[in-house]
Image (tube, rainbow, N blue to C red; front, side):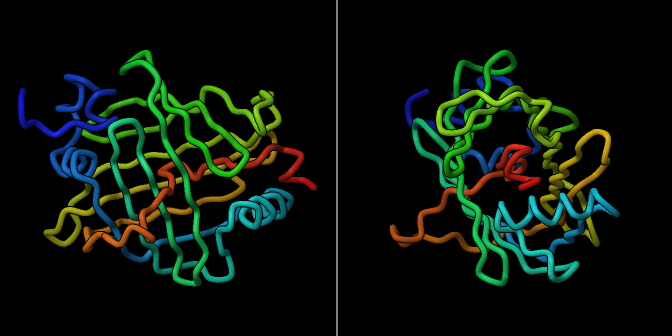
Length: 215
């Protein structure tokens, strides 16, 4: 209808956009910023070694089990821009571009030279990314050589306040869980300066190949 908000997320989901929780709808209609304290941890044994190497490649600080965290989200007609910031100054930036429409379409998430092809599952008002494929510098990479990624977001009530609960988990057979970070965030004032326009990903999940993880 005339005057209705329009952006890549609304267009891609179509009528299914209404299946998201109202707070997630607002975030992906108007953009915004979330912040709070998150938990970070790597696996045990060899999985921990690989997880810490992966974290370094992604710019995720693991020197403390809990950290302050913020994500700014900007919506444009043809893409989503995300910027994730940790309280030590580390940043993760990504651009999401839609292809087709839900449920058969997907998103292309670009972070540096790596591009992920992501499907979306909807459940209980939440949103879960599903890795369909990946490439680096334009060359397809076998999924077996890449850690499995499980990234999701939903709304959860905590102490009578609705929070944005997210979790990003990397695992790799046969090592098990390599790396995890998660938290329950609250809405904060968004960045408005053009120089601060973000680009970070709800799926920071998985931005390097197995060679880069083990090198």
